[in-house]
Length: 349
Length: 201
Image 1 (spheres, rainbow over the protein chains, first blue to last red):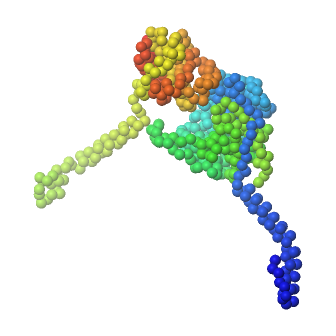
Image 2: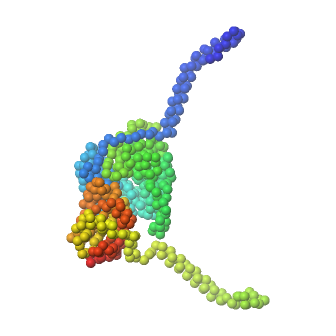
Image 3: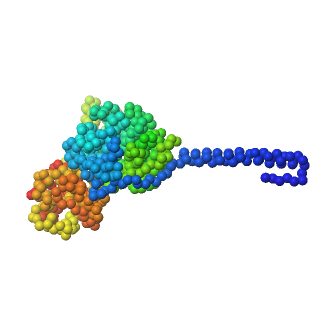
């Protein structure tokens, strides 16, 4: 504050008025500064993703060889966890505490037997198990008993139930236009989607499927940074990229295969996708993220990045349980882990 | 052409070449031959003659036999018959036709020749996450679930290197340890029959 002494009356009055005015403005200045800080911090919160390290809550471990090679997991209405065990040709049921309570299957091609049990999902008291080495998806009841099977053409990629109990099955034909077919609860095809980014490449068309609580069908490509969003009536909604991940992996030397040059990707971008009850999409990144096989990118269905979660262990598959926890299969495929998700994620932006 | 010197050069050349219709026929024939050649070459890209045997390249079986004899003499040393050895690496089984081909042969051994399979067949694994020498439970449980009736071993990396084993394959050796046959998975039907014939003789 400038100080004036021994000057004219006019100057003294001016100084007094200035002091009065500055005294009145002081609270306003503080208020303005406070508002500015709040505004800046809010803006930063919107542009920077929320980072969070997840911790294990429950671990379903490889006790006495319980899980030889878990491929996928799903949840029954009573919150029991079912897991496909590829090396054991079986499906296994675990309780909330990670104790095995039932298993079924065996190697074979008959009802209830598997050649390579892979993608898995559950709805109400029905479980769908896709056999990677054949063209059939078996429907089992919650006691793991065979009900019926759905046969498809092409190589099975993924299978998920929507909120009406219809089963969406993704297959790879080897040609452009990899199909995503919806089967009614009676097992009849009722809807088909031709993914927009399908090229017919052997590796390029593989994607992971997630279905949100609003019945949005989410396709996350394994070696292409592309996420497609469709509605349950087969209408395309939008597509976007996951921020911070390259468009595609580096390519190794192309090899001749089936009369054409096939590009072998050096690793993959994404392992799997999941969705929670708030409609957020969780994508487990693979080789092209700072913490390989541990970073889970959380986006809303418009593609805005909401958070990056970090799993305690490298993992190959994730699901969000009906209890709101995030479940993962570790990279060795012998352990299923349960992690609590920060509550902030569920709040609207 | 240079010998046809004349004032009316064009006419001379025209009479030298075949008549117009014949020329057209010649052009059509040449086009057909060219198209045919292209077709045959193109087809060759997709169709190749049946492959007799794609041996597992540069397989040197002796270090493996020496190692196995020290580990389990009764499995290989005391027989006058040929032996069947599976050299396996789990990551190769991410290829469904490869695992199918292996299991098909393993099933054939179990169903058709169980006695011989128990004594004259063996599977050796290159170490990895599943075939873990310090904790072989996953491998043992997988072998049980797959219905394998022959012994299963995990061999040290040093033996794998000395054997020159690159991709999962099957090898048939005679009683003196000579390599009779080797084939990487997936095997063709013909080579599967050949392997069985050589093993059973």
